[in-house]
Amino acid sequence: MGKTLIEKILSDHTAVELDDRRRLIYVDRIFLHERTGSIALQSLHESGRTVARPKQVFCTMDHIVDTFPGRGDETLMPSGTQFIRATREAARQAGITLFDVRDEKQGIAHVVAAEQGIALPGLTMVCPDSHTCTLGGLGCLAWGIGSTEAEHALATRTLELRTAKTMRVTFDGELCPGVTAKDMILHLIAHYGANGGAGYVVEFAGSAIRALEVEQRMTLCNMAVEFSAVTGLVAPDDKTIDYVRGRPYAPRGEQWKQAVNYWQTLRSDSDAVFDREIRINARGIAPSVSWGINPEQTIAIDERIPSPDGGSERQTYMQRALDYMALEAGAPLAGTPIDAVFIGSCTNSRLSDLRAVAAFLEGKKVAPGIDAVCVPGSTQVKRAAEAEGIHIILKAAGFEWRESGCSMCFYAGGETFGAGKRVLSTTNRNFQNRQGPGVRTHIASPLTVAASAVAGVISDPREVSSMPAIRENHR
View 1 (tube, helix red, strand yellow):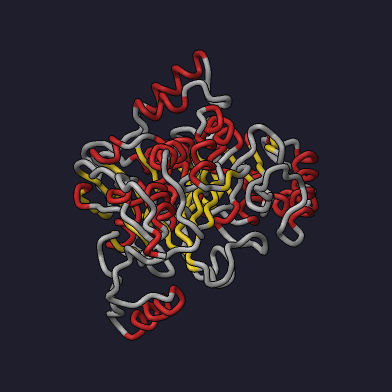
View 2 (tube, rainbow, N blue to C red):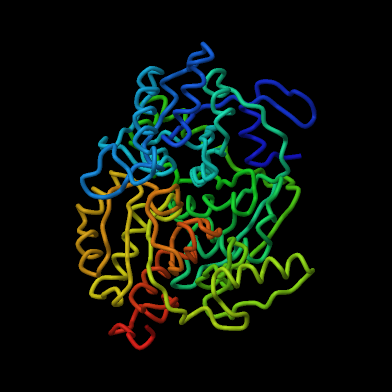
């Protein structure tokens, strides 16, 4: 019987088979950030242990750091400055690579790891952040861990991993214009449930996946954790190799040739058997927007908000979502007035995302009364976007242009749009209070967010793209 991609990578990294359910995995790369990294490093130091291979450990300032122009160590988050300074000192003591607040390589961990070539096909990588699965878009087996696990990995270069089931999600056919990778993953979660991937490592496959560029594949894998999967990944191909080529931490010379030869073997065998298979017609996917308080509560832009159904517990949960979001069952989601939009996060803040937004917004204006914020995923993304004039288009349209970081992807006692505000966001979670106490978050693709910003209401990007003027009558 053939092997799946997942089984091949795990086989190459298994140090010890502990029993039929557990194995000890060798960890190639460890990435930390200032919210939890300092905790793991300090705890390791206090235990009298050291980092096993400092050159394979990286850290960035992304979760807590402010994104306002001219930022430094001071933050809106209470105690944020102490986290930043403690991480800086802990990283110095440990001898690991730190992308500090003003470093040209600073940015969101999962953006930096890819653009620097730290994450590579076939490697194992961990980070104390649940969206580390983003890097599966490169064919890297990457997953989120806790601070205690991070400490163990730092000291031993290994982690215990429970044997997971395998799932293949195949997207066949071509996407319709205006539909993106974000819509694909929202469609999957909406139709198969937020727990649909629980206990599985998911491989995304099919002609629609092969057609995606690498950064779009990262968007898809980013939300594998919202499907409750252990992680998600896409088999590397020529696009992956071209993406990795020449990046600072990528192999060079003879090592590059050896790496490419290995990467070309990283695909599921034709006779490989998965524990579960899901097939989706990509042509049937529409721009999608969440209406409730988890990514499963998502509908196509042209659908109506569902009525509470199922058992009493499910009905109660759906009603709670409707009450929190101040929406009515049976009403259309399109046309709902919004207060703000946010473009950023490890899901959709890469250069390709910003290019798509700028192409859409050129010559258009954000509707009156809409707060619009764009936060690039890394300092290098920001500089590249500015070199192309993307920031000029966004600022002319009415967007605030920021420094890189996680920003308003989540609320940690810092910045927020305000209680009761309805926000359309490119982030990955729409939980209650995710962007601040009482904030009503809808998640969607960058195109849908940009279209809604222009219209002032939740809107279908396929309709707004040719719209000559702002529809102020909706406000």
